[in-house]
Length: 552
RNA sequence: GCCCCCGUAGCUCAGCAGGAUAGAGCAACGGAUUCCUAAUCCGUAGGUCAGGCGUUCGAAUCGCCUCGGGGGCACCA
Image (cartoon, rainbow, N blue to C red; front, side, top):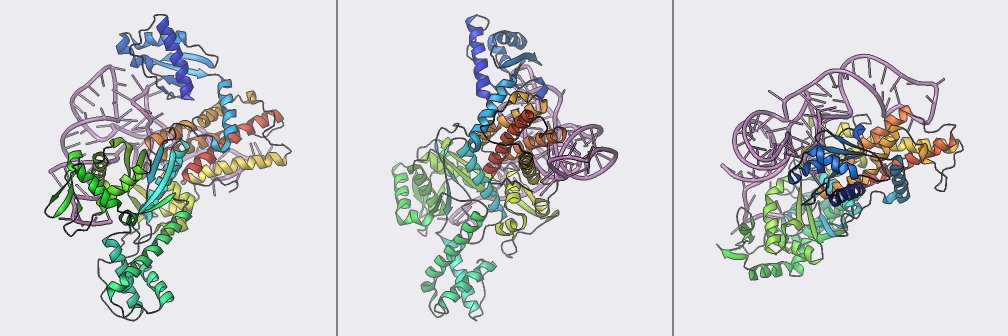
């Protein structure tokens, strides 16, 4: 919608230039925004102020020159205000036509081509398969998933991916933990090491192995048992992670195994390739990447003295692989505690010869879990941490997702379990859902009253004349821009704020105006508006992965 | 010591690529239901945008410094 306004202003500027009123060198960028106060107009632009310097005139004079040439059938009022803003009011017809389009688009309303079909990969969660997901992972999952949905809606060609760190020491610890528990369960007493995985789930895994294979591993040496235990535990945990995520409405397009990068020699090849380019050197028996050449604090080891490769090393191969698969933009979500990792990954991309801009790491800040204001302990060691599955089980998917998505992801989040499940005004998710249910209820009542609702009805939308109705319409029509902006800024919380604002307008309208009345034509027109609203709420919630109930 | 995030109303947070008089919810106080769902609505009160300097027509927003909170600085992942 704003692009249309932009064009109108653009045309006026050109006319002013032709007439010699304005020089326009350089031709200014036109920024269209919404005035602070809705009473001031529907749109405003600050071109007159930004041009003040190059035109060497006062903003107000320039604004008047521009305003003289602002002529368009859809414009109902042009005003100059404040320090030089040009405020525009559009005709009702302008909005109503666009409202019709929105309803016609239905589920697709909000879709844009801002992303131009660019192939984009969002990698998120990627938790080590050494234990169940906890709340922190939950936030990453919700944010990554919603971001993906938003990017898709904004016209990107999206894929999502979970990177499985199934190589390395932590896998050995995992296998060994399961093996030790296995022996314990079969009657041995032993010291369970502090640095192994102590959670209850390890015992469950050990028990499963007993159920399947009995005590056949009991008298075999460790080296013989470990590969089996490692793989069994990993597969089992991964299956759990996958089903927890599915329960949370997060489904990945691809699960990418780190091990596969070793199996097909990608890691070796990546090292060779970087060596050829001169980005790698040997020192102290280890192999280093010259990441300091690309704004990292220091160089990083990729092959240890022991000959083992670091996690960072396979990450290089992994990201090369992503690019080889044709992705033009890579987004990684990580916990904020990994922020030290950002410069070295950016360095890798640059060492490979790519612009830093194609790669973006999104840091998701911590979640503090509270219960009625009291902090819930989340120590992994003690095993009493709250898993994502527990939280989802307690508060429900909708509330959990909403809480993870309501705040800008670069601020710490207090997640209060009692608040999240409380069906009170303190809980915005129900406020929004309630609006949707309320609209559906109005439709049900209308149908019971004999109003036949279908798309082929004749709607006389000019019967919509209330200011509040147009406030809602303007808000509805802003949805595609909200999605675009949310995608561009990669800020997921914008959607929830938008929906809250949209829906509060409706609740106010509802309490002051009746939708269903004896006036059949007016009833239909208002139902049409509510249909558009219902579509917008649904589409917005869809981006957040939250359901829109028809009854509450 | 170095790096990242945060600091806006009593609390939790918005503030859109600098723009007009800084917003919302909760809590507090006062109201609204013969009628489409009161999980709702309307009103009142509440601010040195942590502090300072700078950039400019204009700063909560950009830059630098100080203070405060959180997190990180591995041949771990």
